[in-house]
Length: 88
Image (cartoon, helix red, strand yellow):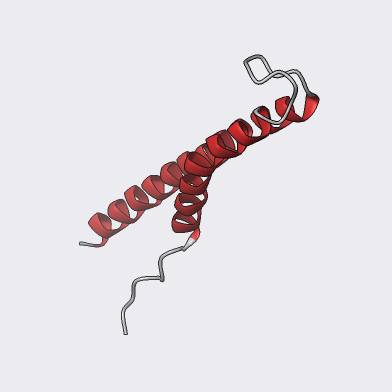
């Protein structure tokens, strides 16, 4: 058995969600924008604005959580490295 802990699946889940949002988000925005009477920018219906800002917020939220996890993992790796050097 290994003494290493099992890696978290959260980063892979976040990567999958980010990929889906990055490729599917513009498609959804385009479909919603083309549904109103005015098919140009700026959107004329509230649902178009809600969709636009919702998808942008989703992408920014996933990016923020990903960066927080990265910083947390780097700090943990540095802590473990210092502990290992202290033991040796």
